[in-house]
Image (cartoon, rainbow, N blue to C red; front, side, top):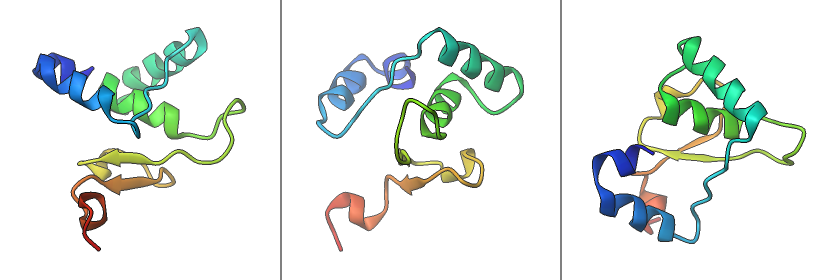
Length: 91
């Protein structure tokens, strides 16, 4: 959503990456994300990612958020800095 709003080509490039998964929001998820936005947890993009990273009955395991702003998420959400050396292929 943010990428498309900034540059039409960026969203196409991001969605072409095999490791990128964009979770759709069903009705219950949309209401939950709306409540998070209203409660001041961030913008639509941050709250969508946060909702998808939180444990839910329909998902097993823990999602990992790849982000350039790890501080945007509360404790307990597993984030990885997109600019970390391991993400760039360096060890």
